[in-house]
Length: 62
Image 1 (tube, rainbow, N blue to C red):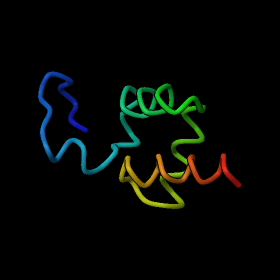
Image 2 (cartoon, helix red, strand yellow):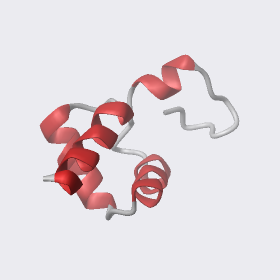
Image 3 (cartoon, rainbow, N blue to C red):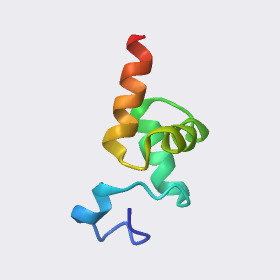
């Protein structure tokens, strides 16, 4: 995701920038998890927000 929150496009949705606090916290809030859990999931499944979301959905159903 871009540093400038007003500039969004396809490339912004393709990868989560785990070094940007806003990006991690935004996804964490949306998924109802802690920011550190997002970083840990990104290490396991990659930085795609879709893959991270799927990871938590699968974790909840297991």
